[in-house]
Amino acid sequence: MYMGAFLHVRDVQSDEYVGREVALRGWVYRLRTLKDSTFILLRDSTGIIQCVVKRDSPHFELSRKLTIESSVKVWGVVAKDPRAPGGYEVRVTKLEPVHIAEAFPITESAARADSEILLDLRHLWIRSRKMTSILKVRSTVFEAIHEFFRSRGFYEVHCPIFVTAAVEGGATLFPVKYFDRENVYLTQSAQFYLEALIYSLERVYTVAPSFRAEKSRTRRHLTEFWHAEAEVAWATLDDIMRVEEELIYHIVRRVLEKNLEELSILGRRIEHLERVKPPFPRLSYDEVIERLQRKGFNIKWGDDLGADEERELTKDFETPIFVIGYPETCKAFYHKNDPERPEITLSEDMLAPEGYGEIIGGGQRIDDARELIEKIKRFGLNPDDYQWYIDLRRYGSVPHSGFGLGVDRLVMWICGLDHIRDAIPFPRDIRRVYP
RNA sequence: GCCGGGGUAGCUCAGCCUGGUAGAGCGUCGGGCUGUUAACCCGAAGGUCCCGGGUUCAAAUCCCGGCCCCGGCGCCA
Image (cartoon, rainbow, N blue to C red; front, side, top):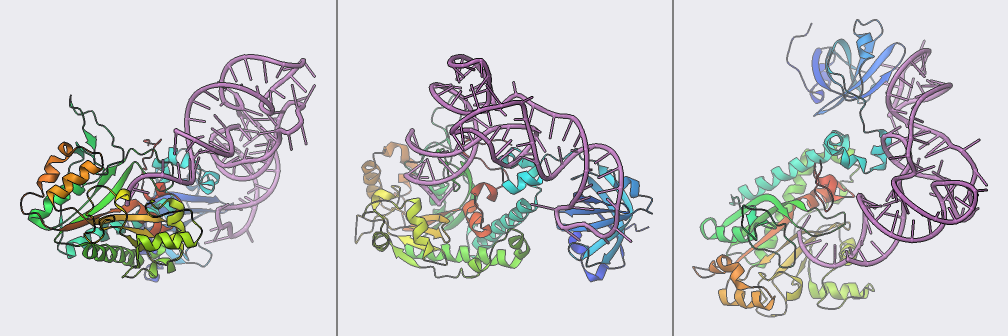
């Protein structure tokens, strides 16, 4: 009887283990009971392997009592067998149920229909191959973000979640009951705090949740999403775009190195990802408007790009693209206006291909106090609400730029998902805060 | 906020237009099956047809009101 440590499914699926006795533990993924054999497809965090219990085994009766998702410990000999899914199986010598699961409420039909119940039963659905694969990719994405910034001399910083003023002018804030104080909200962006931090650390980034109380009913919106934001002292619009495309390139490359199997389970064609290589095409807003007009869109200079427009635009490209120089009215007040053309801003959006749309918004910030105050007023806002932010321009102000990446949207695009909800284990949207 | 779609068995759906005793597949349970691959075969149990009102001899079906859900747009990451 093998008394060694428990191994993982992935480890034993190799010729090296054929003929050797191993111990595994995990959950019953599928169960097929025939007259003389029980086939247990055993799932753990690394994969799935078939375990076979024959009628003459003293554990045969026990194997008949298992149910889907029951947790079990299995001992047996690894065999190579073309009849087994994956090519390897375990011929069971000992079986020990840890917990016999009740009838699992998620059925094949619900999974295939991608139905509502998968969200109600999210705490169970995250065990699925689909969600497991996405979450592994997501983990790589977050790892790669930290890797990238740290290798480029950025300091990781942490900013408050409770805030008192909006960053995005129009976007709605979630009010929070904060003792007896009024006007306390959940943050929409760490940007203002990052701007404060560049005066000591120069290059800073943070990865944190942001909250938007927009009543958006689309497959690209969450009310709570993960935001990777960076801010760089002395950086121009051009400098920051270079950081952004290198970041995206690094993330995509890491996923291609580590998650080919997961992408395959998700049915994601990797050509889309292999093509991603900087520099990304840079299109001016002016150029984009012309392009869209030529395509027959009813859009004029000064209009913001709608979802349909973005979708059509990105169809012409195989990599993410930048759209640069939006009119002042299309962007939040803190964007610096172009000194050469004051009607436009030194702003940019990065749009993901295949119709996925905006994943990054960024640009150069206003670094002059008077200019900032005037623009705040021009936007119908009250400078009193932004005192400390304006203050930053009074003590050694420097040109600086930054951006915010919607990490869930990036995961959605990398995995080729239909809905942003599946890019995060427990999504929060306009209706859903459970489970 | 505006526009569209939907709510029928545990799950996924058909039935609704054209009113007449509630259906299928999957799951569950029982049985069978020479190694299964989303196994297969036989059988059984399983229903507040979202809620309320109306029309009618008769309503899942037609009409009115309400509730809930989904998607698209706007807004944004």
